[in-house]
Length: 202
Ligand SMILES: O=P(O)(O)OP(=O)(O)OP(=O)(O)OC[C@H]1O[C@@H](n2cnc3c(O)ncnc32)[C@H](O)[C@@H]1O
Ligand SMILES: [Mg+2]
Image (cartoon, rainbow, N blue to C red; front, side, top):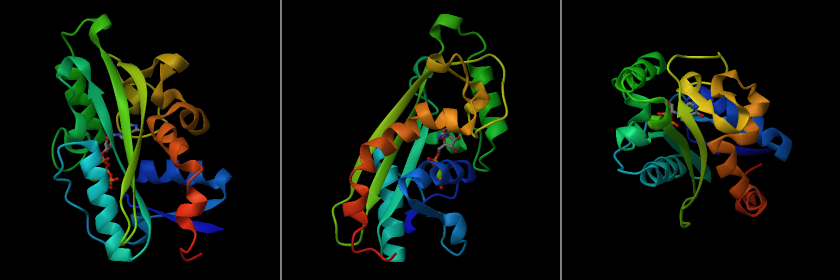
């Protein structure tokens, strides 16, 4: 099977990419398979900038094409926060529970009809000597008042998916893969994968 490198150290993302790429005929490797590679500092102001930064840095380290994912939760009534700070919203130790608790407490006084939010995902494709490009996807929802469900990762337990009438963390992996911001973005890339990977090592 042809191999695709996803420049992420996030276990939840890694599992989703493995599942999404399998039916397309690709085997996914992530940075969890390359523990010697250091974290890329995410200094960008936008998801696009950070996705490019991660993809280009790792493409240069490995000398081959890689895809990076920068994603997060954007909440209207918090002026777009946590946004690019989603992973480290409650502190640098990146705790999903602490991040969700912080959002829930910030929204405590916010009425039910003002809790709209979206997940956003940017995928950047980079290869040494080639122009980097990005695709993006979104998933619309509402922030719940307490956590629900145990599938997924990150903010999934507090994100109600309008389209599915359930919390993201109540969706089975195959259901999340039908509607998620990540799979929307990947769909825009799918048809280009064979040409992007031609000339890469098998
Ligand atoms: O940078 P990498 O190594 O990929 O891993 P990360 O966890 O730091 O990833 P990001 O910088 O892109 O931050 C994304 C954060 O947004 C949240 N997030 C992204 N996609 C999500 C999803 O599908 N479900 C729930 N939360 C998500 C989650 O808290 C992530 O840690
Ligand atoms: Mg990160």
